[in-house]
Length: 127
Image (cartoon, rainbow, N blue to C red):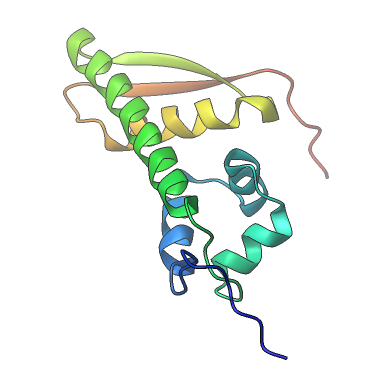
């Protein structure tokens, strides 16, 4: 018996969704969490095994737009101050802020450098 997806499901969006996730720098698990999806369901959509449900692509694009907007705000602040130093936490809950700050530091100009300093507990190093 063949089942069909309800109207509005789209195939072929997995690679585009993956590109957005990689641009932001999130893991599949973190992206699924941000989108309110089960990790396994998200993986099947991204890998092209399942069709993209209605509204998911809009959520992905909105998340990517938010990321870009926050990066732009940091770069603008760095340009106004002729440079910026940011402390970013290595706490897993601060992943989004680290990714935004890191992207801004990479995309800024030489005239408005952004330096990053990690704060928080360091993980033990293995010998």
